[in-house]
Length: 244
Image (tube, rainbow, N blue to C red; front, side):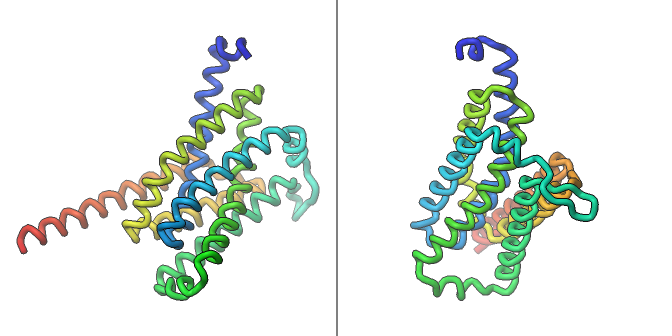
């Protein structure tokens, strides 16, 4: 352990892996923010905390199962000359779930059909939100940890990077969720991001890798444009109030 603390290579690996885990965690934070925006505010914070705690637990549990995880990358079925492993199948299923969930939410936003969901018991809505968060936590955790295994050899470094990244996710999730709830147009943008991420996961499962850099750049560019729109709307409201 002391060798790792005094090793420049270990610190470099920790910084690099932590940065990567934080970037990969953006997907998790966006999904949780969208899901908790549909439940009562009193339960939203608790659902967000539970979701992020589960994300940390799943990642640490998967790190403790390294041999099993490596086995998940072995081909188990062939579809049209493409060898699929259990990891690929999980990514495809998770990506399809993301696409379906985001599409359903977009349809609800466009049709303004949230009233139907509000008639359900609060406990049922809360439980449904937690179940959806668990499903996507498993998918993102699997993708994140297999990436970590390819970048670092020491499990101590991997665990430290995952804990730091989850702490950053926890700190940032509150402001992100509040921003999404306060600005309805950003929720539509977040849902579009989830469709894009879902497509990328399905493509990865079928061995067609879309560089994440392209996806995150597109997301960052779109988010910057939406931020300018939010600021413009806020300034117009201030100007209208001052004239009134």
